[in-house]
Figure 1: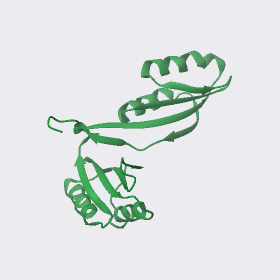
Figure 2: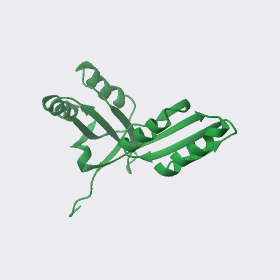
Figure 3: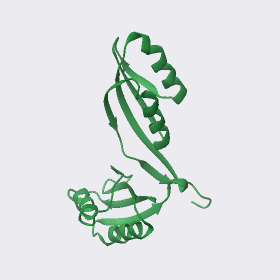
Figure 4: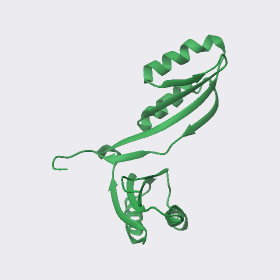
Length: 161
């Protein structure tokens, strides 16, 4: 079972370490973790994706709510959220592979942001599933380097918000 936690925390040093320590001490799994400031510079939003049993996921929420630096915890499933990741891939390629790489990028709406005669950097901002699809289509090429963010997520809009 997978759960997304949107955790609003005080924006100060050591908070990330405390939250990560909670997961480490209790052997909870973190699939993805991203942190960024909110519209209020004193508050950061941590998006944590974790998997576990229903009981484990409930315990994670309870433990997060106990932390002093935590302002608010919201949980939601992937089905009820808009999720995005960003990936950068550096591909080393032969000249005869260039056209196929460009076609894959066009098909998945990935952008080629840098290129030489032998290397290409590709980026995509999309759902985790589409990021995986891009990776699977590019595995047959020589992937020289990958840089990937964690999942960013926000609950879908509902009437009255």
